[in-house]
Image (cartoon, rainbow, N blue to C red; front, side):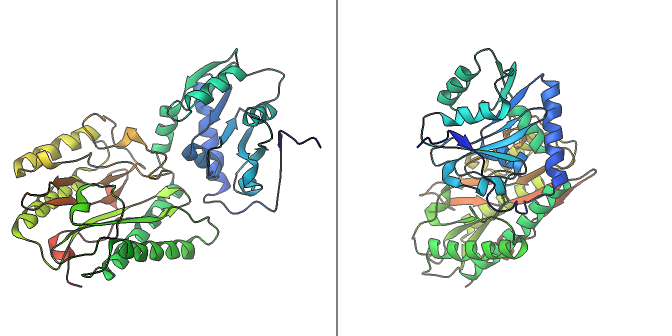
Length: 405
């Protein structure tokens, strides 16, 4: 029996994707304009976030390569046979499946899409994602082609959100607030981090299903940390039991079709001592000032410098742990970071309409010191023409978040 290297499988019907046909078509039009500007004959997308952004298909790699091929007249996702017809149903374009029967059938699938008559002279790839091994293999396939890195150009396109994207981000922020309230409802002495997190996650996921009944559901999560576990922003939940007087970190992350939003709050269980209140109030003061500074026309690094001065004045700059905020969109904790839109000293991007950023100052005071723990607040803002809209409604600060449950 001769088994194919690649094939097409239109199994079932195309399903409803997160965005309209017009939205996906506009994204591809903008991408092809980028190709014209950079004199590219073809683009090979390999990252989860860019494949999803342009096609709607979020792949699960599991050690196999996936991609999307774009020319001026073709666009097709490439997926592994293990996923059968799901990539075609979830792609706003054609799909080619490659099989495992021979090594490098992924590459043969690329050739099947563009044909063998005239190889592309110039090819755009994602240098920040493609592995050295895959870059070498693609290079051996197109020996006469010139390769260009387009990862930063793609990131800049994603940094400006469409109205449809902003709608899904606003819904995400609202659902994060719902998850946050459920987390608070489950905070009590003796309960564990993991049980509190499960309650918040389940509440958000059910709300996503209610609002997006045609979606795929994956990657919604909660990091709920207590005591010493609050020292890192990305520390996983544990089975630690909550104790009165604990500092707590609420971190709710609903994921809607690959779009990440977040709610993060500092809490205390039952009471907070004077040193903890002083540190918490300092971080809240910086947070409030940061919310005021985010507006169109402001440079990311300028926001960072002013907040650094405020932290220094308050006596806590030495405890700051990371940048003051970042972009939102097609991203998650394992893909898609838009590093060109972060509120850090080395980022000079100017905020403009339809960008979406967070304000999230954090300080960490090590164990053995008064007020030990990690303090962090987090709101999401949508940049408009004249001002920024804060789409996070969950209250913050000691007057709201000393939990008496």
